[in-house]
Length: 128
Length: 484
Image 1 (cartoon, rainbow over the protein chains, first blue to last red):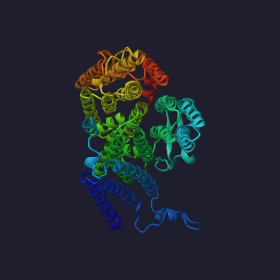
Image 2: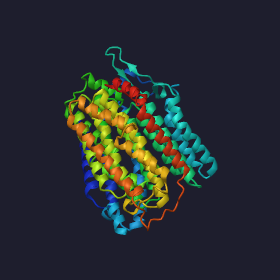
Image 3: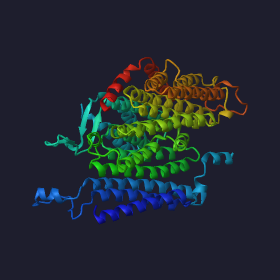
Image 4: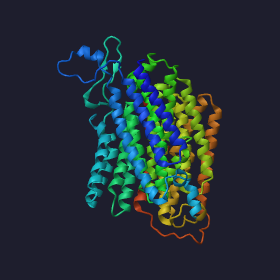
């Protein structure tokens, strides 16, 4: 395994662990969402690392290139295509989460998850 | 007509976008939404079985090794897909019909979310590509969150955000599992991966392969609402409009079977796989029915009962024989119909009383006899009372567990069915049979006709499948024989 690939894999693992810690243990909802983004980006980075090829070329067949040389040297394009899609989905979920946080911040005036997302059934009983 | 296969996804997706964009033309949008909703169950019934290769890229066969490689996304359409997509189409039609008749001014984005969810689960059922399935799994989560947030019920935003946060942790973890599979096999096509695994090209005892199972399994637990996600799943049902909840639970069932069938094809050689599925299914059965027993909000009660029923589906698939998987898939079909009937029926009661607490309800049999009788039959079907469809699938599951050599599981399944019956009878008594509390005001004497119509259609399907289960079980059994 190439050293670059190893560095990328470790970075990816670090991002996921930091993200999980933040998403589970930090109370501030914005920091929690940043943690969730870390997990997503860690997973994306991992998939990018799979497609990495030491000394490889961009997997676009240009006019004049020898096809057998290209097949031997081009990086595997599938992971990059997958990551591109994954980034778009991640951005969409991030946008929806932030929109919900905006509404709830206006309602509660705080970014604390303990206040904002307390057990809804208890909230109902309390209001009654 | 194999050309119709991609249309099953494209039609609801495009229709949703158009409805959302042109929702200011209220009447025209209503007619358009109604027509599209009618088309949804017709397209799968009119389509031929077969494969569809996107872009026309057919599989490439290596002349030396005879190994097949799928370069493009492939949709596979068999009897199983046909029956489930047609059923989800009928349900979407009924839900859209209820929504269109309930409100004078419709919300384009809300209709878009209903159609988007339908398109997403249809794609998840059809696809033979695990990453494609993941993409629509994410889209489905967005649609589900939108449907919950769009309801006018208190704390729906809070519940939507909670679900979104959990989903945003579960989805990348599942993606990571897919990444491990890609690293080992170089493909995201399920057939290619399964061939590589079954031909010994992948070491199934390697930690990486086991880790990929663990990660994808975690995503499946989230998608299915099995423990530890059972509370949040029943929570989102209770915070959605009743007709929306009817559709949401069907989305859950479809995503559950789509993912588990893919996992089954890849990981069935691992003994731990079936043990894991049976363990979490039994946990869901016990927790679902126990928590349902303690609920006073009847929407939440049905939510927990639905989780318990998911356990039956998982149990059938986890047992792993042709008969057991057929029983599990038949149970999935029944659950979609029965739970939808219960959500719509109890939604009619909310509509009439503006009350969801069973302690504050009573005497509604005199006010709403049609709804009460249809709900009673639906509840009996869920509990597995003959000759309704729920009985047939649960009987098959009990027989399957006995024939697999697990009599204790069959006893447990019968006990959970009895407990489901008790929960339902208790709730039914509180709402319909006990004397009406003096402070309860029955505001709307008329239940919307669309709701009665929807319940009637679902009830007919329940009775027909109960009397003639072979109509679907024979086809499902053939499908299962093909993947084993």
